[in-house]
Length: 54
Image 1: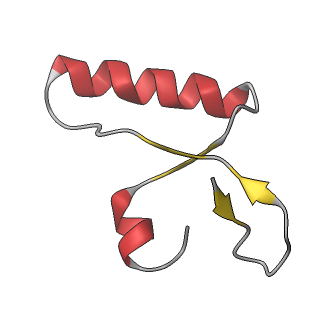
Image 2 (image 1 turned 120 degrees about the horizontal axis):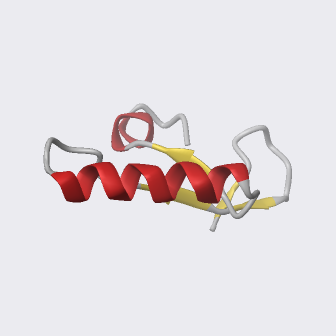
């Protein structure tokens, strides 16, 4: 769990999925999107982490 980047103390569950060219990447992406829709966590990507956005 990561802290909210807006300065609050609320904990946020971040979900990362490698959505590469393989069929397993597609499956990981679909699972991540479903978890995001269900409110389990917030989807993000490694580029956002590198840019300190997540």
